[in-house]
Amino acid sequence: MSAIQVPTSDVKDLGLASLGKLKIEWAEAHMPVLRLVRERFTREQPLRGLRIAACLHVTTETANLVRTLQAGGAEVSLCASNPLSTQDDAAASLVADYGASVYAIKGEDDVTYYRHIEQALARHPQVTMDDGADLVTVLHTKRSELLPEVLGGTEETTTGVIRLRSMAEAGALRYPIVAVNEAMTKHFFDNRYGTGQSTIDGILRATNMLLAGRNFVVAGYGWCGRGVARRASGLGAHVIVTEVDPVRALEAVMDGYRVMPMAEAAAVGEIFVTTTGDIHAVSEKDIERLRDGAVLANSGHFNVEIDISALRRVAVSSRHMRPFVEEFVLADGRRVYLLGEGRLINLAAAEGHPAEVMDMSFANQSLSVEYLVKHGQGLNHTVCVVPIDIDREVARLKLDAMGLRIDTLTEEQARYLASWESGT
Image (cartoon, rainbow, N blue to C red; front, side, top):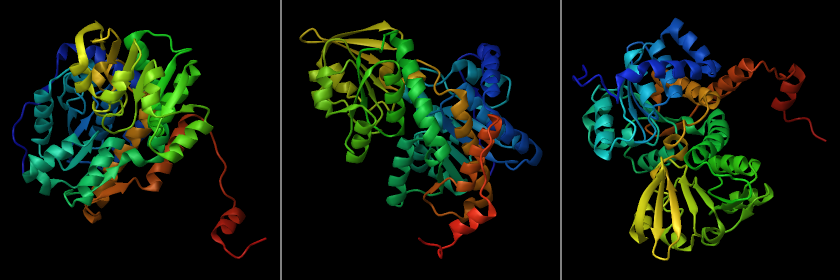
């Protein structure tokens, strides 16, 4: 079935393309693994004729992912996975310089956001790539007639994987999804080092505050929380961790951080970052306990981790102090500052993860799409792990690009590990 006619793009300003192209080239220089994948894809054309709809953060790093998929022969339609994460110059360059269909404008409202998702889907994708599962959800609820054409999909985030596993458990998921987020070369590095650095970057760009000596509260001690806590501590902040998982809470203690309930942390914290993937990690009751001047930021995928509705409801006034900084004055005169509308602070106020970590994440994405083309029809309609061979290949290529070598097992060592006879 041929795709219906839709606009080839909807971006802010194609005049930004020249600036975007320079930034895309800068990112490419720091993405050697993806570049090696692109070179092979160019030779082998494993994605020839494949239609891909991608709902991702539209950044310079994502532009290089799109280029890699195109090099493999795919036709890519790209929309934003967050209203504030689009880099308008990168979006313009993808359209003007690389011929991609892009539907993304930074600051777009919810109506435009979902219209862009539907425009990407209108090109009848055979593979979906998602960052939060919004595209998959729209496909299953509003464009279900397209489902028979879909071979499979990939998902980049913890939040999206949680949603998709819920769909699979309910029997609602109609095609296999590869959880790129679960690859070791993704969540060990992207979530820990990428989120750790880029979250701090976003907070500093938005506020220009000194972190040293401040009480810095991290809600959630998963891979993202670990990264944020480590980077904040490295800048001299006094890190407090809140958790619901006793094992993770114990790990945070052993890592040297204070651990307490959010109800207690709310009264002493000065900067708060939510990384839980769940709703209202900072609740209305917590907002009531905040000290004057408290700063709230979110690094989870959706803007639900801070109870923004409650904050607006209890405030007597609000104003924008700086780009991405909104001040709320409470009835007793306390001031609370919300960064980036409670959306992903690393992309709302900064540029997202460094290219070096997205290099591994997007190599996983590219190779997982190739895997789906080869094996998708034999997979169950569930959330699948990235094959370990792909994960290790990405790590091997990254080490090679860094000029590093590692040991290999001798024949004797391999035999020993495969045996059971040897004992004490």
